[in-house]
Length: 214
Image 1 (cartoon, rainbow, N blue to C red):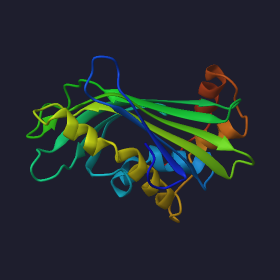
Image 2 (cartoon, rainbow, N blue to C red; image 1 turned 45 degrees about the vertical axis):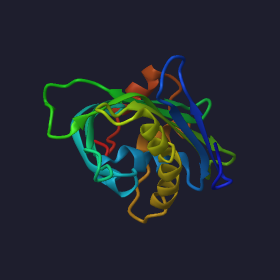
Image 3 (cartoon, helix red, strand yellow; image 1 turned 180 degrees about the vertical axis):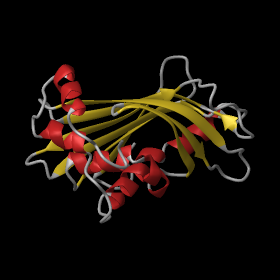
């Protein structure tokens, strides 16, 4: 679907018998993978680069790789704002030099319904792959969600199609900021400090990640 930004590719996919599309954006970012993970994993700065995000609140940090968040997205004035309760799971593969962050809506009694419409993220993913000498990273952002409510499906599709491109543009800008910190776990993965889930957990037991990743 790319008709802008030759260096950002946008795709769409619709499951059989469904009206809503899933969207995917792909582009290279001039930053090493651990720096990009440092941006994505820092929930306190998500409002600076995630499109239309009005609030990001950490509900629980289950582990260095898993957390639960509350997200509130602003919408055009004719549509009621949406919010989501999202569980995320990260995985690193030092062999392929990749990181995946999968996220989807969950129910959590600690986050009851609000005056906003509670949407559903059916599946989302950030896929990061280090390129060449590691100074660049290929980033893929995929989102398949249902905002719920009475918004026409065609309008949902028309609104969501721009999200991956806008997010990639903003991510490129965000990683240039001086206060961005590399994620230490991602750096260790890229340096081959562990090669399995067991080794990674052992590494975590002997290393402090530090703020804002603790």
